[in-house]
Image 1 (cartoon, helix red, strand yellow):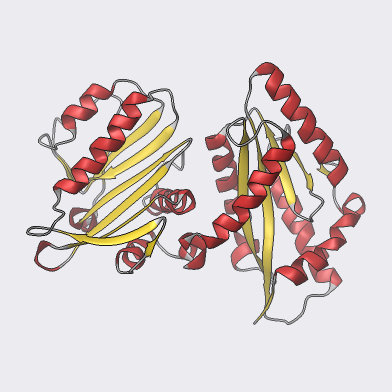
Image 2 (cartoon, rainbow, N blue to C red):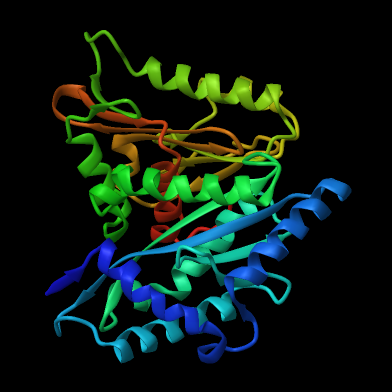
Length: 343
């Protein structure tokens, strides 16, 4: 199998200058999408509405048949563009950037709305990114007005810079997207990461960190949600068993209504356990009774904590502030347990 790396991909993507001839009228050239993006930024500023962009970067092709011909590339790109146009809304604008990347402009779409669109695109393009001949490695990066920029040009710059961040994320470096949730947990907790956004550690009885550390982390996240109840987010807390005596109960009861969706997950649920504005999920899986899981994403931060119980009550743990890794973990958790795929 031969892999056509970034330089060759970008060179071959010059074929897309012929986009007006190759694709239906809803796929626009670089001039049109850039002008539309600038107008959308002005409109969003005037009416105080968010909008988002998604940049799709084809990083490499994988082919068992050797070097790709012009016809191979055109066939792939037609399938790619046609699939994207089927996924996005009629009001969304899709086309090319100058640097041969595909962009989708999403009017009236906030940060989490753009993440949901990326989920749909990944699902729709799954065959082209895993099994097709050729298949491609595609990176999806987004930016949202006004959190990531006040102009369209700034948003494109931010989204483009995030392509590099995503490529450097453990999610991409370890090819975690190909693994099941518990395989990812095993990979991360058994590693020895000590980078800026990733740390492995152990906790347990008689160690500097005990199981109370998990409770303190969850309490801190809940207090942060309580301070900013209107900020959108999602939080999964895997606490082994959902029981009335959970240390989190008092804090959860004080939360009130929030824009953050909160899920309490365990292997079992004690009868009569009910907390307003919190969704409890009992899953018949013994692995949940041997692990702690905290996955939190908001509009401006992310945090993930995974702990697996080992010998003699010692937990192997991993935590991260990498938003791309946390997003991937949430998506895989939802998909593997057939939960509603939402943010």
